[in-house]
Length: 459
Image (cartoon, rainbow, N blue to C red; front, side, top):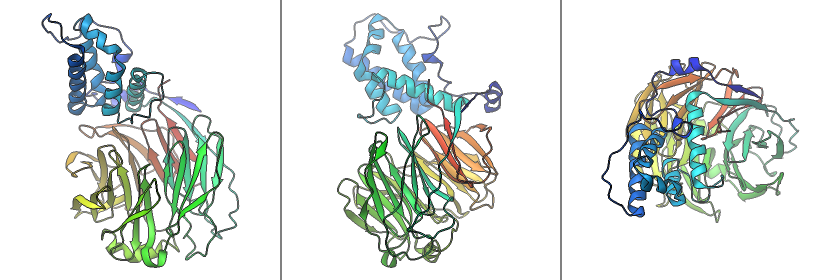
């Protein structure tokens, strides 16, 4: 494991709108501006509501890291105003709104500590301060599949404690993030297969308590995870590849699972209730033009046909092909919220969405950051290596940054405001088959099956 940071990277990144995160690392400064108010005594609930609104407005206009400076100014007004900095309710509301943290996701001792940890982690992400390590496992023979290309990683997934990697032979390897230890390997249950790659992993939904993964033939398997092991694998849904086509991508959360299919007209989207595992919706025409390509996926590893992501609070899904992007409502049986066609064509591997933002690059090398709910453009940036290279760019995003592999290099942009280029990772990984990011980690799997992990978590 290695540490990496560089002052030269800060010079490359240019000015940092919204600041780097020093408000939790520095003491008061007489040169800092302060909000001036009268000496009236304000009710504490009013002050908390005001501090919350000021911080949220600042995060929306200047970025999430800038909210800390706004809070610092408020807390310096007087001792009365400073007292609200000890309100756990205030820090809970701020953490949930600014860092998109669920009410049950408290990891640190208090919500104030949680907010500070998230702030410092995002600051590390912006400044290229990380630890780097690689994860290894011993491939095992899968007696359910005669696929000889098992080291081709198709999907990665992250949770607070684990990382899972799904391969073209159907294997899903589960690792513990804190130690890098390989915990378990799962294979889909045996059945008659239609095509050499019909059991290739097409999507993974991972939490700290449950692993769910899907394969190209439409099967969905699930297992309870926790501690140092996992419960036996169970098939939650038996796919019908003949009538639905290939399940080309799969995503979701605790509440909903979404499958993107190609091969049968009018069956593009399948939505399951993640709690009951009941299939509740089938429909959509997004992948109708790619129907033939969907069948080819079962016998050969072709370029990506489409991607689907569940984002927001887990109630909105975005899906894309090389021609179109669609946002739809999961709670209302796939009602389309917004859609757009791209005349220049979309690099499908570049597409990803998290929280309120989505990133998609076109075949000419231009990338756009879009709002999830209405696809309105927030900012644009240029992606090196994307021009004319449909299968040679992979992208992922978290709440504030876009991470894109192209031309053999992983690069990072901020995506909240201007699409500013920040830096590239030092470590070369060669050809990248899968890439993912969350607020703490970036993970990539190279063509030799090595999983590369960059950790930005505050120490």
